[in-house]
Image (cartoon, rainbow, N blue to C red; front, side, top):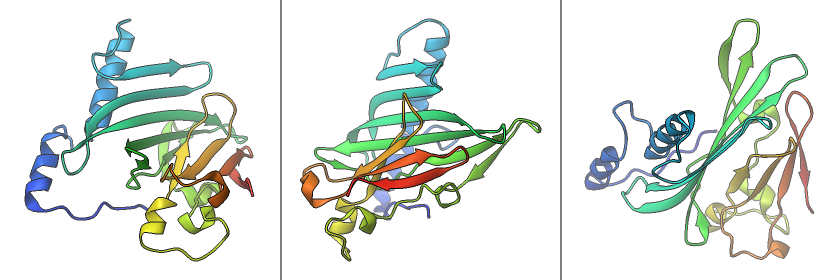
Length: 198
């Protein structure tokens, strides 16, 4: 399931368009692209902070960019690669943005399988990898949630710089650990197995 942001008023949408490049990518990826170009030249990024860890197949960019309403927010773009048992590779890109103490719920990881024989990338979805988490799964005690509670418990993914497992926590960082669950997505060679902390 791909989450869509709520429709914004015309003025907000017009403001958003200014923060996108001509090919309609978000300003976060524009900044990341510029940072990687400077990295190739041995230069530091002019905006944000870039980590490139090639031995571990991991890239992370931290910066500031406008949200869909034009308000500035802190964000992270992560990219990671896994070697699959069948010889192919799994590429995952992940965006996290936060305002104050609450992560934005508009994003979820995008996953692509690379076929080493045809040299093609095929988009795949989190459920096919066993990695799809729904907000009610992170509520504790386990219960039905809706409305604000849904956005508070929305799953926020973190890709691994070391190791092979992804971590999933909730959007609202003010909720005590005793009142929600976290999940470790354990790599099994071709996908992930869910492992909750309680």
